[in-house]
Image (cartoon, rainbow, N blue to C red; front, top):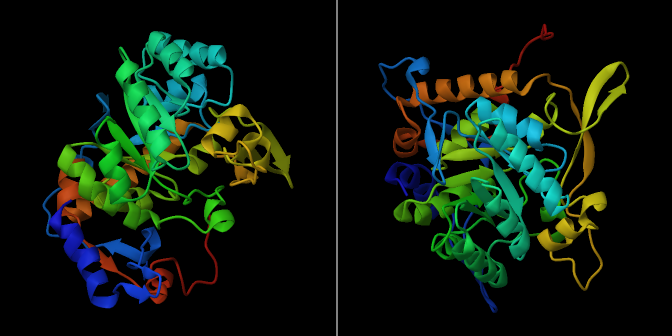
Length: 371
């Protein structure tokens, strides 16, 4: 964990918060932060944003941009995986389908000459074996609670069985979970409840604000040289910059990509505007499926949705989205004087901000904005 981040965020936490004791022991351990709670402090720099390299290695895969598409059935199938792969990112094909259908999508992406990842449940050894035999580059163990010890044990066994594929494991949100995951995973995925279509925190009262979760996991994973992927809560290129400044090596994107041409979601017209379907993998329709039941541990109880279905504005080709996000990230790195993502991890510092600061940072005092 880089000391600059600790100094700028965690040291401030120790000043303003403390452990709150009750008759039952420690109940409030610290304050948590997410992207809107901080800004990256500008640093002295001679570089132009265009000089910032976005190349990064994730689970043995060299990426030109640090973007993974979410393993969701309204975001990533073969078409998205191929398009994002050609742009230098990594598509993660969803698992809300038969093993044969998922293998076919992986094979299609491989024939197109791009690296590809695919989601797999923590207990789905048969699916993992099939994906490995299909030369899938990365298997993403996809679980809502990656610190469930049964999940950890099963994922470790699957990892040992793989002949070719690397493994990304998630999702986790604490340093303790990282200690377990980093003993076998090639990369870990962070995020419990921050996604735009996720209701886990409302339903269960459980989660960790995403920025704090990234910092906590990186504090362990960086020592093991295990890359961290921030999954959920990404709305802008500024959020991506903050996630990487906190120590993440890459981000997983669902909502932003969901409106693109390459997603499998159906196009919908409403009030003369175009939208595409988007839904969480814990939504009512999905959680009844085998994939949903395994991901959210619904066996033996009433399945309570931990996500919603919605529409997102149509945004055109994913290539335009990737270019915009990448350029914004380069601007952030330029302000920090960081030419590489690892350098950005080390050099970036945060300043904690108020609600008034958030308002100040948006267009204001105007009679209207011309689109």
